[in-house]
Image (cartoon, rainbow, N blue to C red):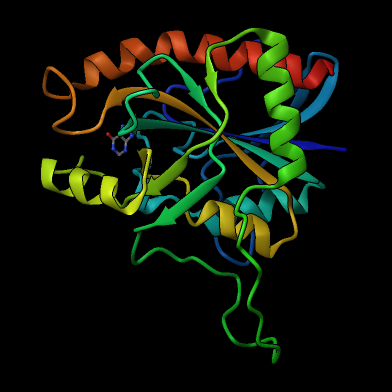
Length: 245
Ligand code: HPA
């Protein structure tokens, strides 16, 4: 079953991926973030898309064409999707350097094209999104995390914020009160668009900082990049174990 991998900040390339083709897919929703790379990783066929684009000018979270990205992966025959997200942590158990496999999310984004349904189909659809991440796929990811012996947390509520700015300390207090363990900017509408297309979807979050007001220092991009270097190695190890299972 073809796997689609959506990379986020820090995951511009997939280490070890032998690229066999590049697909520039045009979709009814416009252009995906980049031409999708088809290749072989750990002996398995995968399709890789970096959601912030492959060029020198990263597409910010609120400007990513999530619909085109998901549509293009679906068009290429991808049957399930693993997404990587760099996130800030609210929960004290989710320290920078850990991988977290969220089981729930709260969507705070606004103004993003968040549905394929423009009303023209004549059928009113309300997709079930009670459990935003696919249970079977999550279980496989958790097995892979155990096999790879990477530091991971097996459940979390991801709050998806609009960005691109980081939060105020008061906002973090509010999100914490809502039940969020993590904050990221790219988890939605990616997850619900995958659900609309019937594609099982799971996320692997790389904790890169303590959320605003919770850490010892202010959040710096340099520190985030430094943490990401280690996180991407962990992500690679988990992914390899997933593909080899
Ligand atoms: N907040 C929101 N998104 C993020 C953060 C954060 O602290 N860190 C990385 N992505």
